[in-house]
Amino acid sequence: MTKRSLKLLALAGLCAATLGGGAMAADGKPSFVSSGSFQVCSDPTFPPLEFFEKTGDREPSGFDTDLIRALAKHWGVKPRFIVTEFTGLLPGLESKRCDAVISGTLITPERTQKLNAVPYLASATIVFGSGKGDIKLNSLDDLSGKVVAVQSGTRYVTIMEKLNADLKAAGKTPAVLQTYPKGSDVAQQVLVGRAAAGLSQDTELAYRELQTPGQFKTLYAFPEKDIFGAYMRPNPEDQQAVQDAVSALKADGTLKAIAEKWKLDPANLETAAQ
Image (cartoon, rainbow, N blue to C red; front, side, top):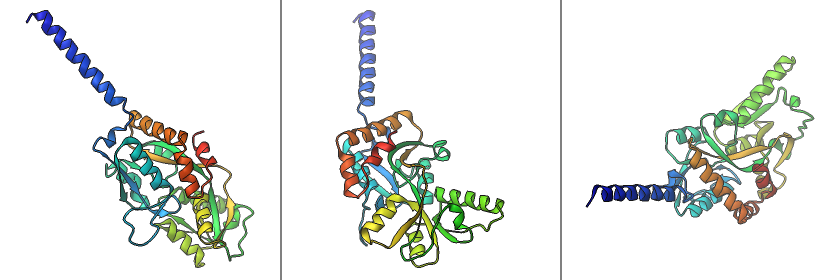
């Protein structure tokens, strides 16, 4: 075989390898599912996004968990849920305990400094109270001196800390801030009267109202829309693959059907993409 022939064979091999690599990159799957599974950290205490429907369930239910299953099916892999307390979700992702976090986690500038996020659902923060209570809020300042429960590790803590700073600056009594590890704990504290109010999302309160009408009521709704995001470690290709998959599930009606199943407004799927 001549040197020219050897060079041509080597060039052909290089082209084949390049084309093969391109085909792998174009399959639409994020790199983290190459093992055949999609491992997601989840805190199943936030209905209707993720929660255990009954004692003994091995896997959680909810909008987020159905989204995770739909993404896994889209990529042809198996979903795996790694139950984690909310405060450990993003640290678990950073330490590679899981491939992604899809667990009622809002997109914030602080979080996206370290991680990538893909939006999938819009919501609004609310202050809620017991349906039997007589507390009324004309503004957040009316929380002055009242016990307010929030879930630790969430932006609700930051909201209340800022409110308390503003109340103190205005010469008013700050609210008494109590933090709990689970969103369900917050609801329970309000329900039994240990807290006058709690902070959550309109999605959770809508579900609780569906389950037990009149148990809670909205006292104040923040005008800004919050966006839930699927978090992953920084990688532009992986972020694009997840974005493309979410867009495909929205286009074929999968996300609309999931939203309707959990009594969420499908219009909030469009808001998340804006």
